Length: 370
Ligand SMILES: NC(=O)c1ccc[n+]([C@@H]2O[C@H](COP(=O)([O-])OP(=O)(O)OC[C@H]3O[C@@H](n4cnc5c(N)ncnc54)[C@H](OP(=O)(O)O)[C@@H]3O)[C@@H](O)[C@H]2O)c1
Image: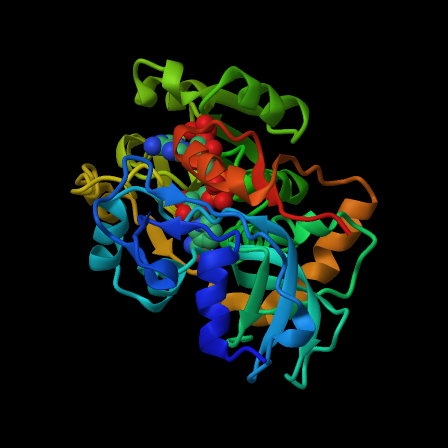
């Protein structure tokens, strides 16, 4: 019978586990040492044999066989950004996402193999925060949600029916306070969150424009997700000119995913009483020193509301969200695009791809098929 601690050691020595900024040392199971941060600071190891669920002592948690996992944009790979992030944003969420010398944590879908927790039983499907490894012993079950609706691809619970879907829902309907006819701009619009925000806004009766980093993504926004317009921000000499082209009368709602120069230029194009939902600032995450933002005084001059939010504070609205979004999926009123890679060993490259923009749609890593 393995103890919990032995399980962890075993998962280090035998498991397929992705480590953040760790290198294999020379002294066995505890030999992962932060000797130097590798240039691409993620490594994987393949477990020789799966841990037999029945031999692992369940302490108080849930043991789960993970067959889908996703890459969470808030998970980091490079150093110094990884360290910097923890220093810069020392809050619970980031700390728990990247813990030095431990597997990266991300959102995934899993099948419960065994459980001593009253809320979960063997065979349950769950989504929530799980480790990047093939088998996990989960002690903190607070993020886990039991999957009730299985007539959709299960990977959707890493995206449209999971955390990113909730983010788009809360961000658009609550933080943006939309009105029919509003002009809406979405950055990183082809990403997991952006593609949904744009479609929610269209269904609501808004005029919607998105920006993305390639022609393929721009085509997707216009032809698959039904955005009114879209442009490749990497090809624009002047973002202010580009925004004026699509919003001659200004922007009512900006759904902010990127920060940096884009935010500065959007501020110049906001209409009085506009709303900016600050969902994320991906252009800033890997910088040692985040850039300053000009034009902030326009928030005052034009009575603009700019509000950040964290989806984790809104999870109690999940049933209401499902009630709205499941029919939209089944009736084909909402499209959703995933970019899937197979195998945990391909997860690090896929994660790094997020920061290069190589993913088209929600990045998903399939770990096992049932
Ligand atoms: N507030 C919350 O609770 C919450 C929850 C989830 C996500 N978020 C945030 O929401 C944002 C979108 O997340 P997501 O899951 O939709 O993203 P995603 O699917 O992971 O897509 C990320 C996209 O961001 C774009 N990007 C990367 N680096 C960029 C840069 N330097 N400048 C501009 N664009 C860049 C790339 O697309 P292009 O090729 O188009 O550049 C990339 O494909 C992120 O900032 C994330 O941190 C916040």
